[in-house]
Length: 160
Length: 428
Image (cartoon, rainbow over the protein chains, first blue to last red):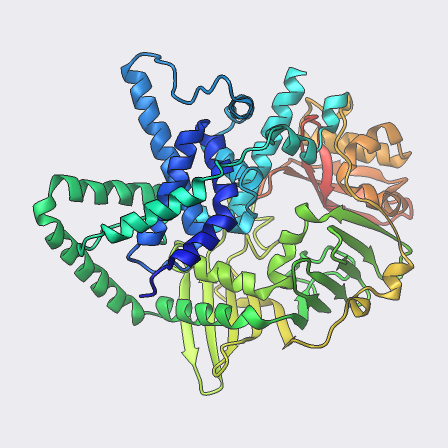
C-alpha cells in the first residue's frame, strides 16, 4: 500500500482546500465548523489505511458526509433545546449573511437538487465529478441540476 | 415580463455569494500539523470503514456510523469484527474475480488507464439515422449513414462531427457548439455547457468506458459477457430499457439511453486500447438491431485545429439556437393537443405572435421550419401520450403540407419552462 506523504498532502491542500471550504461553509454557514470538517477530511485521507484512487472525489464525499452529519447533530440539539439559536449564526460576518441568503433560496429545493447545485456552483465541480462523488449516473445529476434551476426560476417568476 | 428572461447564468449568479469565501490563512498549517500528529499517534489497530472509500455519500455515512459504533461500543471485539469483515471481503473478492462482471470491470479499468496518453482520435462509424437529423438521433428502421468524429483532446477539446452529406457539429474550443447542415449557408449555435455532455461518449469513448466501469454491478438486469482471444478481448453488456413505457412504447427505441441495448466493446489484447464498439437495440423477439458500429478508431494522429475548422464552417452564418420561452396565453393552461392545434394552425399563415413563443428551442432553425411547414392544414389530431424519459407529451396528428403531401407526425411538446407554456420540442 502506498502511504500518502506530507508533501503530497500539502499539495492536495493547496489544490482543494478553497473549493472544499467554500462548499462546507455554504452548507453549514459557520467558519470554524466548516474548517473543522475540511481539516478532518484531509486528516482522514492522510491516515487512511486504504489506497485512495481518486483523492479529490474522496475528499468531497467526506466533506459532504461531514456536513450532513454536522447538520443532523445541530438539528437534534435544536430539537432538544426547543428553538435554541443555531450555532451557524455569525451575525457580524458578511459571508454568513450571504450563506443565509443562498440557503434560503436553495431551501425550496429537494436535498438531492440542492446537493448537486452546491457541488456545481460552490465547489466548482463538473457534472461527471459530481456523478462519481454521489455515485449516480451523470444524466441523473444533470437532470437534478436542471430541475433545481428550473424550480428556482419558477419560484422567482412567481414571486416577482 | 422581465422574469421570464432569467437565464441560467443569472440564476447561477443569484446562487453565488457576492463576497469571497476563503478559509483562514493558517488552515493549511493547522491541517499539516494535525495530520502529522494523527499519524504518529495511529495505533497498529486496523480501522474499519475509515472514510468514504468507494461508496456514495449516504452509504458512507452509514458505514462511518457502523464503524464508529463498533469501535465505541465493543472495543474488546473490535479485532474480531475487523477480522471477520476482512475475511468476508476476501471471500467476496475471490468470488467476484471469477465472474464475467469482474472480468468486464477489469477490462474497462485497464482500457481507461491506457487512454491517459491519448491526445487525439478519429473514429469512422456507421449510424442508423437520417443525415439531416441531430447527431444523437437514431432510428432502427433507417439505413446506415457514414459518420466521422475527429477530436483533439486537451483543456479545451476541439472536435468535429460529420454525417455524410448531412448534419455537422463543431466545437472550436471557444465554449460554443456550432451546428449546420451540409450545403446550407445558415447554421445555429449553442452554449457549450448545455450541449457537449450530450455527445461526450461519442467524442470521448473513455467517458463511455468510465460510465460502464462505474455502473458495472449496479444496474439491475444488466448482464456481462467477456471473451478473450490472443489479439482481441470483447466485452458485451446487455441492459434493459430505462424509463416508463406503460402509456406508450413510442420512445423505447428512440435513444441509446432509453432502449434495451447490447453494447459491444472490442479491445486490443496487448495494449488494452479500445479498437471498436457496436451498440445494438434488443428487440422484443430477442434479436438485435445494430444501431451504431465503428469501422475504425485511430489515436494520436497529427490533427490540428485548422484541419477540423473547415472552409464549409467558415462560409456558414450562425445564429443563436435558443430563446427563453415567453408567456403567450394561447399556449398556457390548455392541454397539449389543444396547444398542438394552436401551433399547427398558426403555421398555416405563419402567425409570428404565437410561433415566436412556441418555437424558442428551435429559434436557429425557424426559417427551415417555416419553409417546410407554412401553409399546412390539420387533417386530424389524436390523443396525447407520454413515453420513456421524455419530460413532455407527444401529440399524434396528420397534416397536409402546402404541396399536397400528407404526413403523420408525433409532435413533441413540453411546458416545463418558467412561462408555463407549451413549446414545440421536436417531431416535425
